[in-house]
Image (cartoon, rainbow, N blue to C red; front, side, top):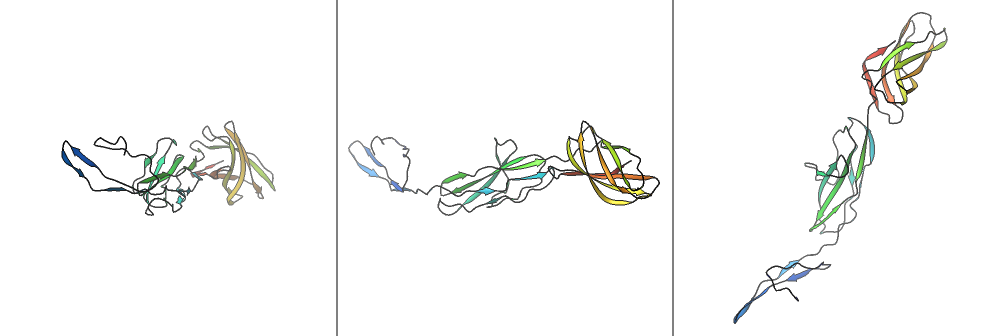
Length: 232
């Protein structure tokens, strides 16, 4: 090899197997030749494809991220899944060394990729994003008014909150008193700290209480329960 006259040697890019040996000379002494060392060149890893892009609600567990069986390398594959919360810095997930990966519950959007190693080759998959949607913020959600209604008509409930984001929601509520119902739902548009929804038809005269039990974001299907209800 032209110019390869030092104690170490960096090979060029290889596309096939190669054998190397070293011939050592010193003065008038006979030369000595080492045994041959084989460098095995494996084909590049391909078909490292993962899937599982999805949207979940905060605190939920994503469905399993699945990966294809790759090709290339030496035919034997090692896997390492990594995760990131900024899609820039990725870190290994402990014990995530299988073809597929089942994430734990998440509270923020998280990115995943799979590293495949085989025969000295390494390949990173494309990134899979699990988007985490927030739950409706109902910490100070309050029902502030219930309109009077005639028999055979519905009532309008007014609600307020400083933490609930603007948007379209489904309100689940119970009715008690002279009128009763359980698990009724109604749509509500919430903006600027307040919103209204309409109850089912009230058939009986007398005092009626509406108790809100949960709020669901219609865009994300994420919901929050009001554990003690919220009545008016």
